[in-house]
Length: 220
Image 1 (cartoon, rainbow, N blue to C red):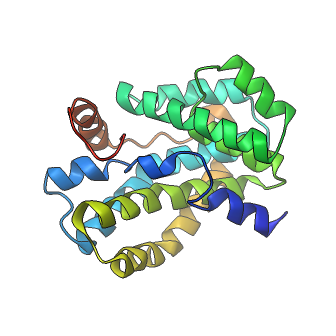
Image 2: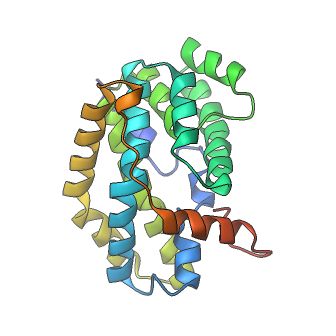
Image 3: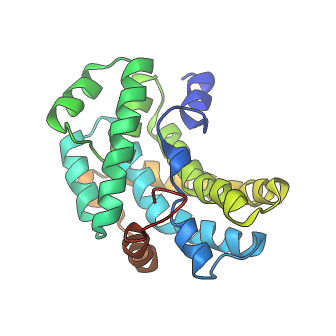
């Protein structure tokens, strides 16, 4: 397995569109739930152990070689918010374009043909990881990191939070990211029916409210 390929896939500069999304942080900032680095850490931790674990397991399962269409349906079932489903598919389309250009793969081509409007982003990421020669836990690590790095990056812009403080939040969450990735890879080996589905209802509610805002900095 290539460590360099893992770095490319996890890099925030990988052209998959993630920079335009806050992972729910913009709505949380407006609601007063994120005001400083301590609040950011709590928000990221909650997101990591709920929707982050779910997404990481989906990516791990795709990297393992489970049916991507079945995984896409499983992702739909685990995403009750229409706004978040639309976001996941938009990000999936963007990830698909970048992945097919970077690591051409028949599996990516087949999923792109079957889901022309976009498959869920974690499923596409898992297939991209597989095409890059990475394993299930690598794919899960990418998702776990993205789950917390997106809000952290967004809050730097939204609150003018010191970037050093935001990076410290990510560093302190590193052991928990490792554990979530490990759990996700292990659960993926049980098949689609054994994938986790922890929920974060407040994130769903905030996502629906955010989608209706006439003016916003981030797409989600």
